[in-house]
Amino acid sequence: MSVAPEPIDAATVVVARDTDEDIEVLMLRRNSKIYFGGMWVFPGGRVDPSDREDEKQVSVCDGGNGRGFRAAAVREAREEAGVDLGDTELHHFAHWLPPAVRPKRFSTQFFLALAPADLDVAIDHGEITEHHWMTPANALRLRAAGEIEIVTPTFCTLNWLEQFRTVSDASAAVQNPECFHTHIKQVDGSDPGMVAFYSGDVSYDSLDLAAPGPRRRCYMLQSAWWWEEHDGNESNLSH
Image (cartoon, rainbow, N blue to C red; front, top):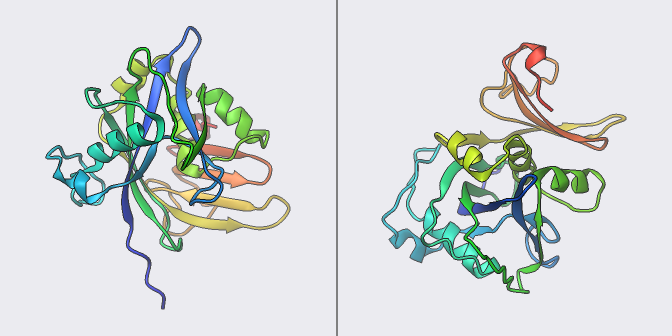
């Protein structure tokens, strides 16, 4: 029996700003030659040993050491995009952990930060090759059209942010970090893909797509991606 790889601690920060119409978030495209190559992501990366020297801790879903994540988020934003968040409040809103079947897993804490005024983004042109400010709705539209590639945590974060009019509204909605520790099911047939289940879903352990009850899952099928969450009452279904 193979042993699941030990997760690598990491941090990601969603740098967001208000516009006359909607929130915009800073999206970065990763170099095609590195892990998650070609994907559009938020600034982030693994927690370095030096980050652990920061005494500020965050609450983590797995009971682990919450030290170093905030420092890593600030450092990665500076290194990848030239964004200084040293004096900016970071709102810790999620903890993502991929399924144990993945050969490489990042246990990632997600933060939300208001972009500093007069920000001049400066990507490193190494790990990061492009950057764009996008509204969540536009980023999701580009993914659906096949114009950009994103991973599941990015998709679900954009889906969550789409409901807010301002960054302060989104920040105010953050209480404790949401836990997204993934169980995954492969879907075959005429519309292949994957479905990711999260704690609170009736099928989190069974992976039964048809079981009646509460839903907290992400569909990633050939035809479309969507988030589904409700308490078992279909009238509360959210796409």
